[in-house]
Length: 487
Image (tube, rainbow, N blue to C red; front, side, top):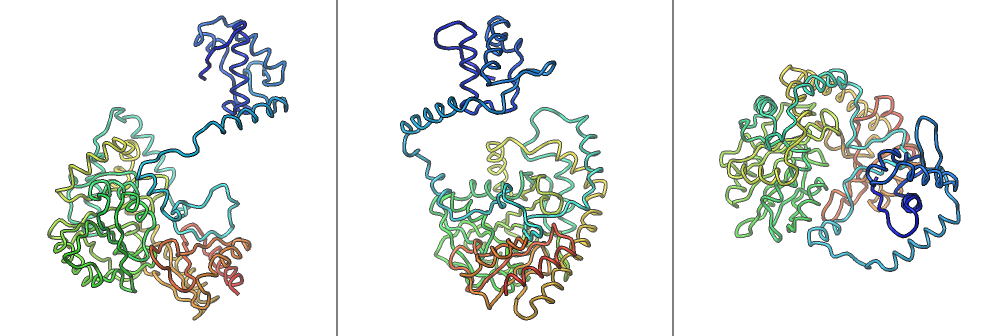
């Protein structure tokens, strides 16, 4: 604790005043332990008896209390008159503070972005049946195995700075996994480990985008990407999506310049459309002609339930125009915050340098544990189990929607991913908020797709229903309650 002795009078009064001020200003709160008297005396260069006298005065006036053998703590309440006086002084202080703070252009652009893709306020009362798309169940995750891997590698962990690109063993495992599961053409040296795909988006924007550059996004699209590009000062061009994904024939044509196209071809976010091979090839041809890069976000490639896996756009690329990003957040657990970028050769040095400037490197312990998790076959085994478990919940959701809504709704994106997009043609878009509120009162959390449009949202109500964190029974009950709220 930082205490500055100032003012006149005996030393014990100076210590007393400093601690009392910290309590009244909220820097020390109810139940906080005061510094050990011997240590505080040493830090201040004064006698321990001086500190003891100050503590006794605080206890006598009701600011603190002592526990034998434990220490001295801030009291649960302090004299009301002192609180009122302190609040008055804070109001006076606020009157002297500047009305506004000069912010950078970046900060102003960021604050001007409408809405936010951040998860809902965790302090809000939880609903019983939450269909949030970003949530997943930890029921089948091998917690004990993961804990053993962390402990094993902690014993031999190098405590120095790690390579900025990431653990070599993990990059080797990721390269092998991507080659066999997604047909991504990559070597370990092309892989940059990052703190989730959100950081990957930020690093790419710093390397490629200057204010005024044009960036293409799907419409609708992932809002977290839009906010990053807009904060970077990009001009955003929205290209509509149909049942086959991005309408490539509507992309800008020369002589218009485009720096980057952000796409989610394997499971378009949020509609769930899958970009077919002919459009993938057309997208690559367009990028080569325009001199643009394609940022391929394969955020939930492991969750595919129908049809054969499609080759990543990066695997079809022959001109080095695709930046491929993926994450372990959706398939393992969100707090892992570990993703990767497959970098084209011309961008490798710049992206690595920007990563170094941003945070040096990603957690070494998590990387080492994940490398072993993949090398020993646990990751593939878990993905198979997770996919089967998710498929059962997906089937329960589709069955419940059919049973409760029938032909009154249109379901998109059910072939892959951990959410579906549900359109309710009979409900105008303007009544979506009221429906969501009624559902919440019934204990059901559902979410509008409107924030994921950069221009005009769909004319009717569109809801994103995630099923990753619900049991099959909860899904059935939640959809029934949603139908009742919609009536």
